[in-house]
Image (cartoon, rainbow, N blue to C red; front, side, top):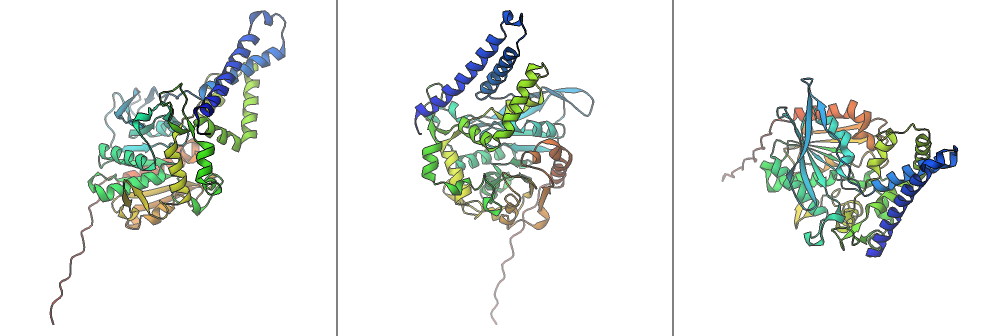
Length: 426
């Protein structure tokens, strides 16, 4: 499968489906056909509209779509996205609120690199903007990164987080969501040993696989059911000639999307049938609930092959983080080195991706951290998406996280080394 032909074949199928949708919509909407009402033509036009939009979204990077928000002063403040640190595989961006004083809470929101863009956290960002100075990791689509930029694996990802934390300074509070949770923990431990003055004030870990074996799910156990050779042969392809990253080995976003949809094929099929019916009845809109969800869900990005494979091998198969033997740039990272950063874990009781127990394992790894600097929360009835978006996040989890941040905003003094005892001769 590691050929450009495989990658281009998937892109050809996607492009053809988009073209078929556009053609069906145009043909069925021909004015002359409206002389005699025909339900078949109306259905074809609706099918074409939904199909064209769906397959077009698969190669489009969504916009943040946060033009403004209403502040405590009752005024609308414009929101602009500024790049603070620009790197080949991902940028550090800042949401600048015009006409507002800088907020005391300074948060780095670490977005997952798991097949979707950082905009998957749009609702999370919107909920934090009114009360925080917000920075987000904006990872790039691997197909758009030239081969000359080199590799990018879990160690490089961790070092990117280290650099971002250093740039923002020690008064930062880090919130990691899903996939980057174990790597954010490792980056914090790396700083604790290498550059203690650059450590963040607090670290909030939301629904991530620190210890995938603590409560395995179908998703986290996938790595144990296949060999690395099978993964490399079946999942890895080379970017075709259409993109800047031509020749780069990647785990294609379209392949990942196929896996996502196959897990709930029946539900997705029903959703699209209902949407076609709504379009026929002129009840659909550009930003209705269906389009709002699927415009984001279908927008997928490629991951570098080395990042995907090293994640499966080192995080899921070998459990390097869970066993506290993760190595970054030739250096063993000890999670026990975290002694001054407050750590909180958040899990969803009904999370079928990163089940309860996988994330809270981080607290046991932080063996050098006092108990009063550790916290955990399991949200009843919440699934994976609900713990960082939706009502569970807005009403219950967000207030708890902000309270935790406020309680740990002041710098902690490093513990003094124990005094050496001199032996006296008797």
